Image (cartoon, rainbow over all chains, first blue to last red; front, side):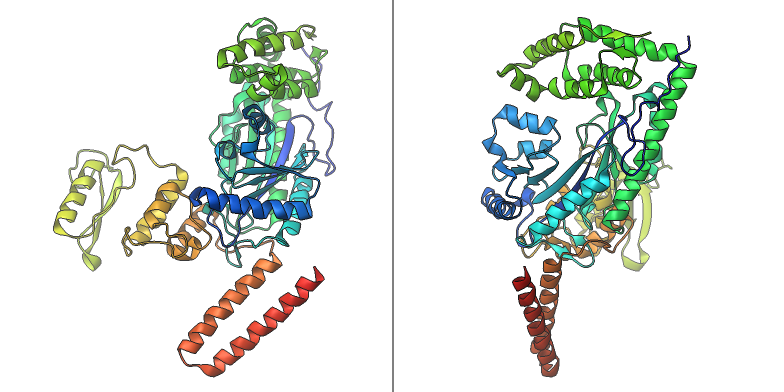
Length: 352
Length: 181
């Protein structure tokens, strides 16, 4: 059987002319900053952290008046999970007791984590591979905040951070890529190894230590010292764009050489989502990942990539419970998740 | 490679045998490394420290391995029990276990180890990139103040006067910048 689809046919171009499409889901640039006369959060007392939170809040009120600035403890548990699932805050910050805080712009394009591993982690977010845009936004806020805060910095090591792996620019640029095609042609391991040889970090969707559930990878720079910010951002963008191209090629090969492997993967995933009665988060993510690939290749009726991305977010524990308006046990969540996805997938059909 | 002491098990770690110029590096298994450590401890000489796995702990992750390597090189000259960052008070050993520094001053307190660790982590030793003006001025001021103290204590008064003038100039510049903001 031959499918007559071009895997690149639906691609859009970013401002920089890089084929970003829906393989590059989003990107993030974060800047780690610390105050000169304060202990790093892991070694600080609750009182120390509260004081740092107060200083940062004051600076944010002066320089970013539209931002919502909150202590993490002020959020209900479900809302904290929602922030985590939306990639605004990390697991570490979620678990931080006193002094942990978060500040974000109304459109969530910039978020500052307060008292995570470092006193401030200023994060800029952007669609596709527009890391330059994400960095410029984070950098502008950083420059404004510095008017009010005394940063720890030396000419030799740059910005001083709690872990020496972040000194220098304190910058980590990461692209979130959906690489199921490379997985299906059996090349993902060699791509990951190649990236690691180029001194890039490759992680799963949840950040440090997490598996690449749903074949969604975060690719970021390992070195933050020795190159300037623009050079780091350009390099990570360029390499992510190369990986996107490899994913395109893998999808093209799948369509031309093993269409049945692809169709079987899509059909099975759709069947499970339309019929399962219990679905755990990671399991659902694996099937939705296949649906995302199918939607990207326009192989499903009534399903777009943006729809799948929304489902990937809404089916996670925090969002699910928020949507249901009630706290649920793990088993209850699996049941409700399967109901929710069955409903959403009911009218979806495979075209071939 | 087989252990150079028992010649049976696979070698997993390096220890130093003998003292100073006569010291010899041996590649040994964990069991022999522990025996050597006990023997050296009993003899009052510095014990070689097997870096991982010897206490039933899982092998250290990459970060820990890099820090361990840096400590192994520098730690031979400096006792591990030696405290500490003068500002936050964390011990070298505590920092080593958690791979997190206590405060910005730790970078100066543990400079020797960190120089090695930073190079291993980044393949670079010099910051290139953004320079925050306020922090740069604070750093310059600190350097001048330290030099001024040294000059006064050493009774090098001409040098001290020159340093004091530089400090004044810096304060004036900062004042002007502050007004501009």
